Length: 301
Image 1 (cartoon, one colour):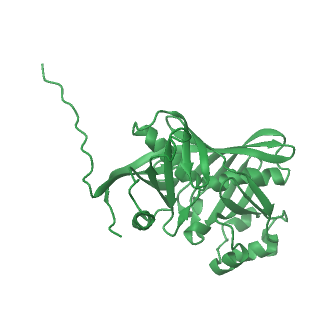
Image 2: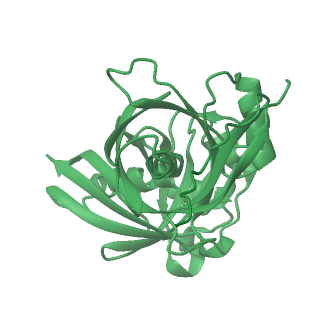
Image 3: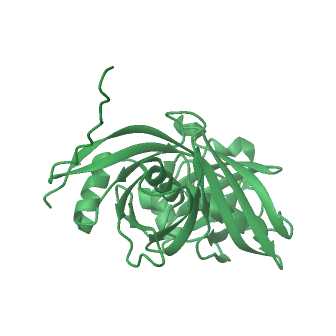
């Protein structure tokens, strides 16, 4: 009888960190929104995290650390685009939580994730994860025609619904446009910066079709480039729906399709809970598919 073999897991060298790349909100591999998850990142400075995020050059890279207080959170995550650090983001939260469970670092179920915006809950299953909302915000936005012009569209390309600045930890401007106009939108970076100087999330263009919608998101943290799947904007969509009276009291499910223009089709399954005509909670869920793994050098900056 042959002797049993035991797999030996070798820890990365001291100047290397392990990472995973996953596709989030992905109906198939090489779709959805790619995410790099850097593990055991407690010793990294902000400058080192930013350098690694620029190296991966994905919409976001997360850095997993020990929680500040293990009694209130299971892990801490720092979220970076290639340009800046974000207080909160959806697809990084979903992808990081699922990766930690898949690697056996945490058990499936409800995880408590600490980020700069606070502690949020992520429910992880075998195929993906569901993210709960952070603090809900809602305030009036610019005139629809002004925001339309900032994304290269005209007055006839909008439905006339007002723009709301809404979020669940990260704020976005929501503009409902016609189906014919959606594919023609092109962001004007200077115009958007001038119109939305304090909106960290970006702009979401929405075309509704019953309980589903097709969206395009131009992300402020990515220098207003288009994002293939934006969980934080998906959460805020529920706040916008409630503000416009498009969902009733209680909990309503809705599905968003995103990323077609980038050849990264994405599906985001969401809920919003409404009480007294206002959104009180939202969730976003989707599949997470592992794509790559390896080690990366620690920057010396």
